[in-house]
Amino acid sequence: MSEDPPQHRPDGTPLRRGWTTGACATAATKSALAALLSGPFEDPVTITLPGGQEPAFALAHEARGAGYAEAGIVKDAGDDPDVTHGALVIAHVERGEKGKGISFHAGKGVGTITKPGLPLAVGEPAVNPVPRRMMTGVVEELAAAHGVAPDFSITISVRDGEKLAEKTWNKRLGIVDGLSILGTTGIVIPYSCSAWIHSIHRGIDVARAMGLAHVVGSTGDTSEKAAMARLGLPLEAYLDMGDFVGGLLKYLKAHPIERVTIAGGFAKMAKLAQGALDLHSGRSTVDLSFLAEMLQELGLDDQDVEHARAANTANEVLAIATGAGIALGDRVAQRARKEARRIVGQASRVDVLIVDRSGAIVGESG
Image (cartoon, rainbow, N blue to C red; front, side, top):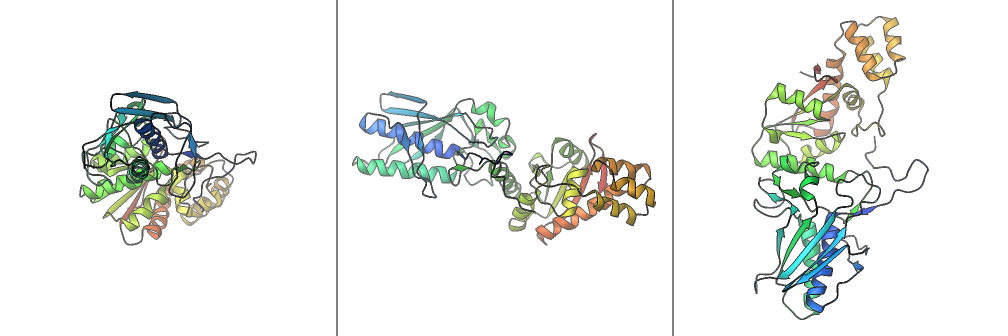
């Protein structure tokens, strides 16, 4: 099944794309530096993205004082349900120490790296490499145009970033006190969930850097808690993969960890057993005939098999199996493990836990 995000609304109109925090920080940096060097803020301010696009951003904040200027831009994530949509991203620019070049700092609402494995060193502000390169580019260009050395200090802050970060993985990844400034293209593609998948990858990187031999990808809070109770691993071993089991497994194939457990609800694991790599209800469905055939293989009588085939939901099928004393959860877990191993190859040993809505484990691949 395709993992491409939807491109249109239900009425057929195209979804509107937006801009990453990294693009907003770059535009804010450019405008603030222009004000520091020449007087007026550039508003709107235009930047060039890595792909060559040239968006313009309106300023929502500007300030200046002795030796500094700062500009702020409200992030527009388009039609993507991005946690940072509407956040004010501010760049504070001042002259740095002569000959030291450009330095980056975390202001209020931007996190600091405290664990190894991320693309930045421990102690660095959570301003990712591509946004840093974008900001470095605009600073060097403006400095050259004004005949000065590119020795500047850039502090990025995000209004209410500490609160927004509570809705992200940052604390678990070891990014404390705020958000990460993200973006590889500068563009937010609606429903691509790129920030979520980015967090899955960074979670694997942190686990590898910490020497963990076992990680757990969970579809949600209930399945994660059940896996925690069963496995007792360090917090960093648990990856909130949501619906993106494909994103988890493909990254593990290239960046292996000895063992991975996939934990999720019955319906989502049934989708994985069918070969779906995106488990979202809008992008994959459970084939009840597939489950009915499993029940037939397990010895359920024909009348109940047909009852299962005509069921309304996957959980109704599970209830039929449970009532008949048939371990359908285990069979689905085994099939799901087979599909997961097809993706991850020999890189990691895979097992699957299936958890019901109450948090009880109702299926294991063994």
